[in-house]
Image (tube, rainbow, N blue to C red; front, side, top):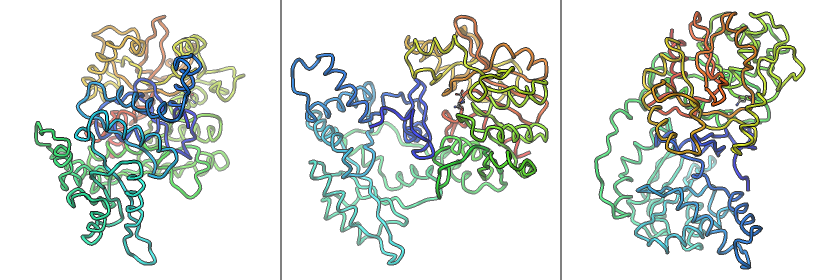
Length: 528
Ligand code: GLN
């Protein structure tokens, strides 16, 4: 029922994924972007909350002209309308109905798909059921019953799967394939085994081995335009799993309420971005989660940080664990351990420098201490107004923003390697869409700019920039607003092996074939 993922707790639901156009979306969309290597807009995320809100708003505005507003047809109709809008202009549209068949939440979506099938014809729609085949440890036997149930439940909605992808710890054997074949009444070749593997990036290769691409095209009666080429992908997948040298990166954050489970989901994109860079540099990645609160009570434990090849302070909100993060950043700076600060991680690096190098002992962000004499990070009133007027996400700066990079800076060099060209294309697209054009800032067409995504309220306070820079802190990239205000986007300490921060979240634009430059820089420095 959530409208979007903006208000969800990441430790419970996983990371909030941010799109170029400022959507706050379920992390799953991120996987599609990473695999398709393309920017996916927020309209591609459809939630029940959005559907109901639209329908109730329409009803209040009298748009149904006296009709009785009902679950059927109004809810499936609104779902269909949104699917079609997202598919507009594309050759194929992939719809993932989340959750498990039998969930109450899915019913409207299954109705919508069935109705879409009637509209566009069965030749133009293919259903893939993804099921899980448990192997209970006390009998060590793979069970097909849940799959059979899923097929039956789907059929109650008039949907028969054309393909079944069988997730399990182990590959599917012939006996079980036959059972499923009988139950679903489909060709055996369309039952595809997808056992657990070492990395999700191997999945396309496995599915290709099963010929899924060809079979899908056949099913949809579409002719292939070219043969897929997997060579470079294969090389990267192998590098992901068998790098010789190990790089050990600490992610220092506040870690609460996760129970017995790891933080992999709350920091999904950071993990992925690190993995992409490690694979491209042919090293094995080790990630260690370090709870910053420890350093508040036991500063003597800070020296444990010296065992890491790099430290990241990720994005975050609120005061919990913040002083510990600042201590960790100080340790990284003073001991020249490669450091990458992401959003809050850049803000806190600014505070640390202001306090310990520039003599502003009580420097802080007004998010934590609204009364500080040195609010080096603060809410810019003018920025708040602009964001409120734009009505895109309340007072948060959300989505892609362009930044110009300082000539010759560490950051510019990293972006120059590969990304600048890709971003130039992105800028052209943003220019076309007048509603999104404000994200470009006031840069001329010739300026070399990069585009990264944002999700924050606070900014570096322009009143302190000169003092910080005099003290040796370098702001190496900024966004230029139409009223001339500069928003600081990147910082670096050039004398260090690698000490870099950004107000953005570059992890959202990383993929295996095109890793995020700042992560690449961190791993490279860590390898040294
Ligand atoms: N809390 C900070 C802000 O709102 C940083 C947010 C973040 O790290 N995404 O500006």
